[in-house]
Length: 221
Image 1 (cartoon, rainbow, N blue to C red):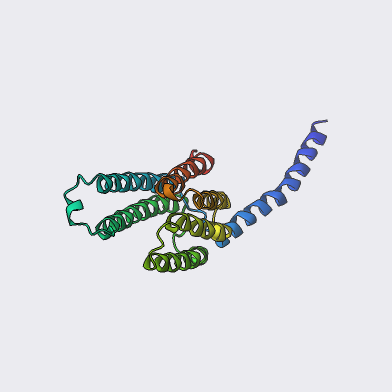
Image 2 (image 1 turned 60 degrees about the horizontal axis):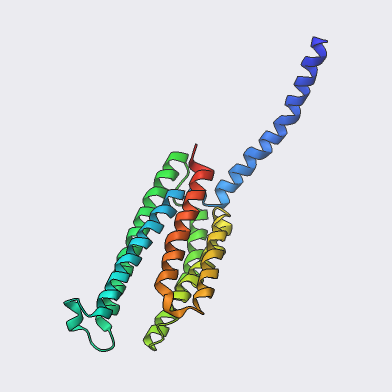
């Protein structure tokens, strides 16, 4: 009886070995074709920076509307000084979000023993950059023509398209973050006066939610 039990266990182990080998090969192929070191903490950090930037921008806009800032005395009627301030707030926010996201992703990459830069990173980079660059040129031209009302929804839509386009070269869940950005951008087309609020929801809240889910799913252990 013990012999038959031993034989059954032996054959079960032999049957499971090919499955384990296939899973190992699948993981190796996934590591070589996808950039899987994106950290959930990167999304949380980027979202937090975006919310902070949105708060500073709202304070600057409210200050300009009320006219109780010293800088408001220097503004032209077209509000060029306000636009300059908002530009620098957006630039600093982007740099802070990028640096924090890079640091957390680098730490996870180092922890997992996966290279930070490789063929998968290059594919991810180009699939993100092309839609973002086209969107940046398009929105810059709109601002040159004085069409500012669609800049906020345009940013959300083009960023969402970039995420969806790049999702096939990184964690697949990032496409849902892209879908969320696109939906918010489309809704913002009909609520033009709430661009800053939609920015805060898209670049801030959605990033924090996404980052929390990714951390819980992949990094909690």
